[in-house]
Length: 233
Image (cartoon, rainbow, N blue to C red; front, side, top):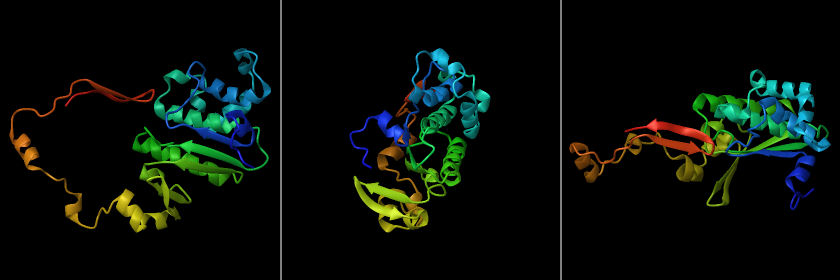
């Protein structure tokens, strides 16, 4: 079956759900209501009060599956970014909940983006378990963090300049000469390869007492999530 031309609701009805690089949730609702809304949507929603009891048991079970049951009554707006990524994953799964029969496809756009190392590892382990524990769900994700690819993915497809450069098992991709040269790098072949290059201008700058760059109070946002807080250097 081709999905070209179908709107998101129609694709979801065929068992295809997705998440976004920057997590998308309903900020005015609680964590539980976000999941309830996706479960209730196929049946219609006359008012938000319908969510009070809609699929509450199933929604709580799904939150437990992604480790958010303790935040069920918290507002989505105030969630830490790692929790918001988990909530978005639960929402995608909730949207597919009515498609219990047949194969389902979960599309994830950089699920580990914006997460610290420990959060990234925990989320990717959860995603891996979804595919391994449910034979009816296939997970396809795009990712640039190599630790979220190797050791997690069953198969890897590499795009370079918009073209398929390699496809296969993770260990095969890790040893692919083209991928190593163009993407992964050749770390470990020579100690000199890992050393920073110091130009004459940089040497003069480091010897000077005049600052080359001064930063005060730098704040950076990754979508709705703040990544840097008042950084000065």
